[in-house]
Image (cartoon, rainbow, N blue to C red; front, side, top):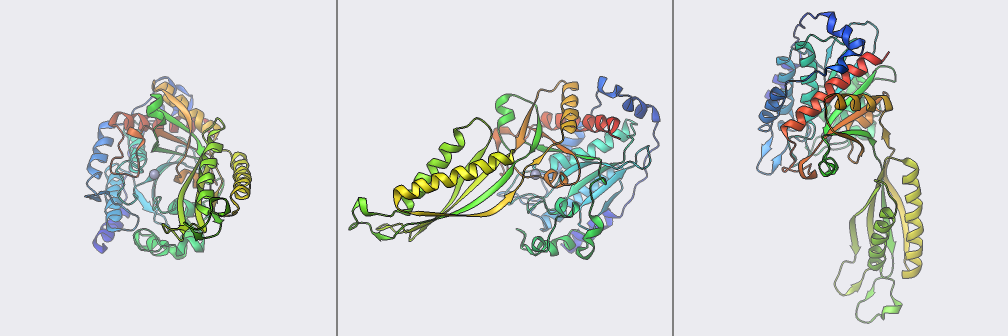
Length: 444
Ligand SMILES: [Zn+2]
């Protein structure tokens, strides 16, 4: 590990000179003429990087680049090499995020930011994160090769530890707490230790923190991780935002008693109440049109014995939607359903909130630039929410953002079966490239 880290830090300090540019293309871009003839990335190169990256952290059970593990560090070394070969002078911020800047032509403008992450879940795939990270590097490289200079600085970022709680991006917007730092990551290291392992400095993370106005805006390309685009035969998803999420723990209390001797009309069966409640949650959430989702995902039964009526069940509900008011409304509805089921089964329901995160909405202009870019490239597209969390939800705290989705084959992610087609990846990178150009021309 220490060898990987030394190699990584050495790459991190490598600066490369930027080529000289003609201002003509930038002028055309600024005049909005770039939309008439969209630019293209080198898709073959981009997909070649992804294919080579598939060998980094690959085990018998999938990709295992879990944050702060040796494989994660190897993935970061690989990524640092891509920055370097692309002529981008990558540096580490004090959180351990990898960032490279392409200077703009107008002084005093805040940077546009593009990127994603390269860490994975346990037994994950090669596309969740790397697609957006490598595309961001490719976009910066393509702009340079095609002699297009943006007015704004363009910052390419690869966030550290997305899968363990969007750590790098959360710190970037100043939301990382002492409690977050004390959490243990899947690699077994604490976040505090992890920041040091990836080359950050936990005592100086404030130096990496940005505030509103520091970033002109953020685009992130990502695989969809669901099957909606594939089902709709659409090539590009224009993400309207990352859904808000509320997790409840519900404790249902009945009375444990003999399964043979207790008549059916004299029971206080917590399991029966849990079953009715599980069905009621599903009926309620599907009774309205919309993309709201709710899941009863965990059930702990006491005493969990064949011949005893369950006296207690603790279950969880995961509720998500893009609309905070709708989350609040279903919260109330689930509690009302619990009350009536409790009355009918002679049990009691107690709710506690485990997690509550608000929706992070995309910026209307940034979505329009993605649509304009997709349309200009002749790519079919649709607006959609993101049901999964992303670094973009953190950046949304301080800057306008929007995300670009490409199809996931079979809607599968966080699995070795995760797959996106090379043509879709190239399409996504092309949309990112032209959205950046459109935003650069339009933003102050
Ligand atoms: Zn991801």
